Every structure is written in C-alpha cells, then in structure tokens.
Amino acid sequence: MSELIDVVLTVNGVPRPLSIPARRLLSDCLRHDLRLTGTHVGCEHGVCGACTVLVDGLPMRSCLLLAVSVEGNDITTVEGLAEPDGALSAVQQAFRDCHGLQCGFCTPGFLTTVTAGLRDNPDPDEQQARDMIGGNLCRCTGYQNIVRAVLRAAELAR
Image (cartoon, rainbow, N blue to C red; front, side, top):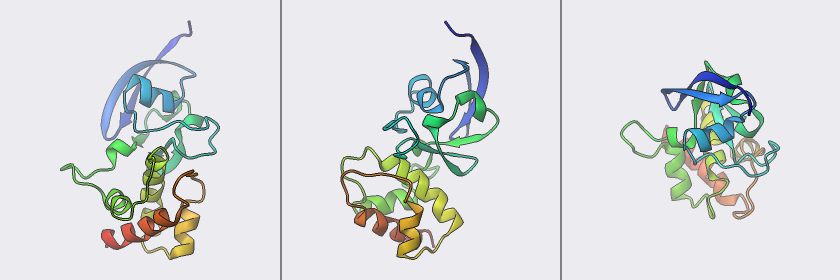
C-alpha cells in the first residue's frame, strides 16, 4: 500500500480535498476519485488526446500528469466547459450543430483542446483549425465535421 498524500485540487472552479497515492495519474484521479468520467483514457501514452484537460487554461494530457503535480492549478474538464447557467459553450454547441462527433470517445479531448485553441486564435482559417486539433485523434469522423465545428465555434463566440 502506497502512502497517501493530502492535496486540494481545484477542478471546474471547486476546491476538492483528496488523499491520493503520490503516483496517481490526474486522469485516474478525475475519473475514479472525483467521478468526473468525461475525461476519457484512450492510449495512456499521451498520444490520442482523449484525456486532454485544461490546466490553467492550457491543454494537457491528464494521463501523463501526476495529480499531486497540479495542486495549486486550475483544472478544467469537459464537465466544466458549459456556461454557468448550464447552456452549452460555443465550442460544445458548434460540435453539436456540425456533427463533430460520432462515437463520442474523443470528443471531450477535442472540446477542451478547441476551447483553449480559440482563446489563443479566435478567428482561425481552415488550416489553423486543422493545426489546432492536430494532436487529437479520432477514429470515426474523418475530421471534416470537427474542422467545421472549430470554424463554427469561432463564429458563435464573436
């Protein structure tokens, strides 16, 4: 049994005190300890992007981060992307409108990645949209509708 470390993780704006093993991955902490199952774990090697969350607004692969290493940072999961009143964010609405998902497994990683990407580049062209999502893999959509969703989200956010 490994020693437990007491941490307070701020997830989706809420401080969450936890006692976790020092080597617990952030993805496992979110899914198993906090029951926030929107963050998906695909490859467990940081390649697919399904586990992407925002750490202080930057997209990070939660399967590569130890949970104890993000204490003091603001973590946003897909569950935290909606508006305070529960309405879909512009990115979520655009993915819905443009059918930027099929099986949905990769969708949380795309939503968090695009949210951060549009913060940095609020008016991307098609190539910039493709570059924005270049680190996330999808086995179902062929990416066309995802690219459309990125461009639509930029329009909605204006």
